[in-house]
Figure 1 (cartoon, rainbow, N blue to C red):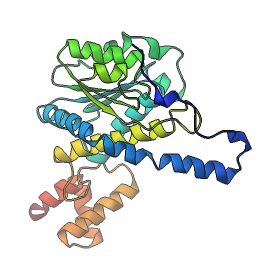
Figure 2 (figure 1 turned 90 degrees about the vertical axis):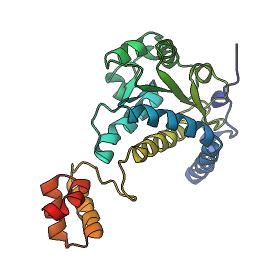
Figure 3 (figure 1 turned 90 degrees about the horizontal axis):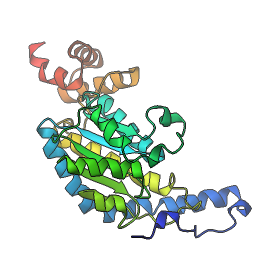
Length: 271
């Protein structure tokens, strides 16, 4: 059964090559402004998916993202940023891409057309009913993603998706679909643009909200962040200064001693 791919419809702008630089930038920017409004309409869907993820992760489950091309890369970016930002282990949020890690930098031909490979990739991580798998595909038709979610459904694993077409095969496969309808791209079919931006924003929403719900933020601070560079050491030091009303040197000493902001604050009276 066919459906309308708004992501593939012709751009409403003509003769892009005749536009000046500022005209191109202004028109791209005008299109980008529509993305948050499209996401706003999908907030109820995102809420339901997040609640499912939180419930599973509170019971020891993990979150998987699967995708191909731009969508797969965005999932990997979001997953890879969770450990340094929230101090969680690297295998709590996992991003998988069609074609494997080689596809992160360079497209792997026809990898996204394999309906069996996503399930094989998930099995390497001992996927189970405790986990949640979110498929990411702007078109909503990517075989790698759909095949993976179908197998998850058959094995009683909760599935969600992020797509930018309404009523797609992917949306119909996922138990908890998120559809962000951004419309035609500025460059016809270039879904790395508005669709990619929408996916990135939704992924930010999902992982950040989940981590807050799991207690990985205190107040509005990333108290469990990893101290992986001088900037983050300085940020953590200033968080401790603010929380404990101590000077910079004492705050930094506490941070280094206890390893992160949360531990430094919790153990301040036992230093």
